Length: 314
Image (cartoon, rainbow, N blue to C red; front, top):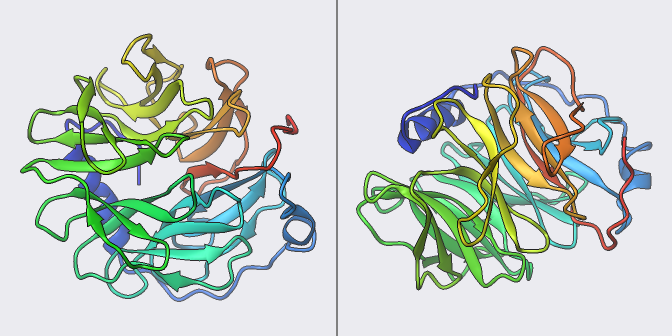
């Protein structure tokens, strides 16, 4: 998906779904560097970044070190695999895949094994977000005609619909304590909203829609992408809607921010060099560093939660 400016969220969703539904060629498994990253790198205090990449010919889920080193391909399927979301203990990854004909939510172990299908529906289930207690996954689905926010237990049971409007809601993200969910609404009182985890008490945080939300580990700020200034950029805002800041220093298009476990850095995708690459910056937008560098589309980075706040700065 190109990070181009779009007027409303539905335009962005259409581009994403077109990527999901695009037929992909059969691929062999890419060489693995598991000995240098996975076998030594899945301790509870190891920092890793999951992301999606087309470097193998179609969108697949990869892992890499926090400095961009030792990329490992986790999924190997001719369908579209993207939008990784870590379990809170860092042992599993939820993601969207169209491997059974339409986008559904799946879960796999952090080494790419033990893939399980969580949702099964002819509609589109996208953008999974693991709950802080590790028991549930929030996601957006069009199973009732328009995109709404749902939650489901990790084993696929106990499906609950949290929003129920004529508008489209998308991009759910849990607060660190699991009590609230931020999401976007378009085509009906457009904006960015926060609701209780049971769907109650929604209130408008911002008068414009955001995308790809990520709550800071301390619960005080939310990072997100937005087109409200005429281009896709990365922003942060306090949870009461105050102190809105644009972190992007380019109008080329940037999206998919995610906080480091310590809350001091943000990883994101940027098209500042002409194609989608993964970058990291300090939480105030300074100290920009490029983690991937090739001609393929790479986006949706997700920082692995760790048991401690120790991080290695590249």
